Image (cartoon, rainbow, N blue to C red; front, side, top):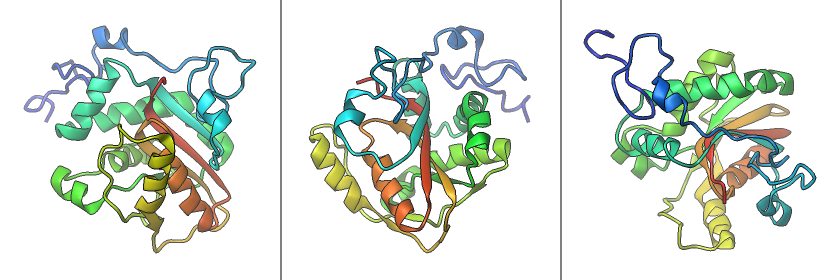
Length: 229
């Protein structure tokens, strides 16, 4: 299969050699990982370890325990995620999951994560796109960690258009209306929400509230990238 469909770099999409880790050497040098010091809540880079929390987490309520983003949402990772999300490059999920596992797999085990919960996609977007990018990452991460996936805990009930022009409070209100409890139940479990990008935290916060309503005691999240602002 690799002969007929050779592997491609998950960042620049160029054909690469088999066994090269889903990324070419040139792009590997360009990756911008989230580096310490980081916010103790969302995992975003902060300027000083004495701050403990970023400005967003200082002023906004967070009901999830902690976040584990891998990359800063800057080039070239930002372009890679756009291709993954909107241009059908579903195979990039393998690279993203590998990076998450290499960086945080041991931590997830220590935290006792019981279930992986991908952020759900609205049915309209699912129909037009054909896949849920968060679920693709969760599937690959499940293979690496042995942690099961639960897709039945949260439902996406409202379509949310791009929210770039909205204030943080308006985004929070929109996202709280966008999700509802599914048909599943996971009393006393520890859950790890999976998403591709963490921006303001409104989506993760809305999903966390649903999981807490279902009896899940501890909710964490991981994402491929996080916005720096």
